[in-house]
Image (cartoon, rainbow, N blue to C red; front, side):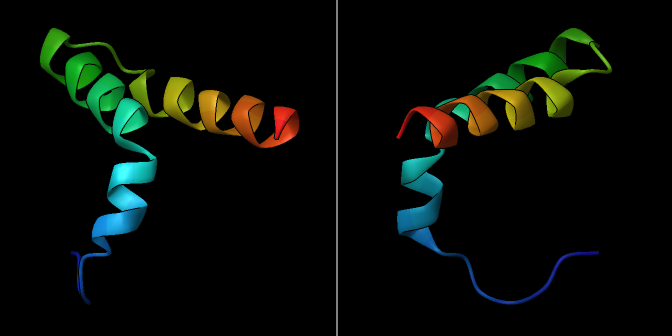
Length: 47
């Protein structure tokens, strides 16, 4: 399913989105990925 190497710096840069996604999955929400993607888009626009 997944392959390659893990980019630690990329993970650190997006840690808040990773936590939001993990929390949404744990709570049973189906839209966690969409929320994380939207947060990333908003960050990109404001940068």
